[in-house]
Amino acid sequence: MIDLYTWGTSNGRKASIMLEECGLDYTVHPIHIGQGDQFTPEFIAVNPNSKIPAIVDQDADGGPYTVIESGAILMYLGDKTGNFFPVEHRKRYEVIQWLMWQMGGVGPNFGQVHHFLRSEEARKVTYGVERYTKEMRRLYGVLNTRLEGRDFICDDYSIADIATFPWVLRYEWQEVDLAEWPNVKRWFDSIHARPAVQKGITIPSAP
Image (cartoon, rainbow, N blue to C red; front, side, top):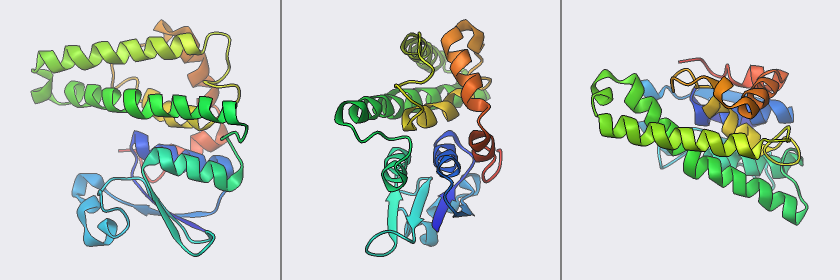
């Protein structure tokens, strides 16, 4: 059994999608970040950094084991189950590269776009809007090129796709039309149709 501490954000959905895809049993502990649950002593005892998601694997070798940071959770669960994270050296590091691309590029920049476009006060800061929107669009272009002739970001469906999808899921917040990047749109529709993804994006709630 795995305890999942999460909320309905792009990073949170990475963990719930992966758990569903792997068919693992887990218990959801909603951490309402809008109400400050992430700063309670109980959650800080799980993650001193006060960020979701986090998991506690009650069945880990050597006893319960805590994993924080969404990318690390995906890698851990991939290794635990043998799913969506290749063992072969070259393929494994190709997936890691694109996972890092999401964590270092897509997540931070798309997140800033969400902030500047969804807050009337922040939207007035035109420098921020233009800076992060431009970088977001560049990253969509990178993904579109990567997906040319490919069904997935790497050879097979992997944690790189699982990490990136929840951020693209917020395309309406970003005020973009995915049809502008046809390869991204095809990829998005394919992943969105997966039953485990459909379930994972509803956990624990849709803010």
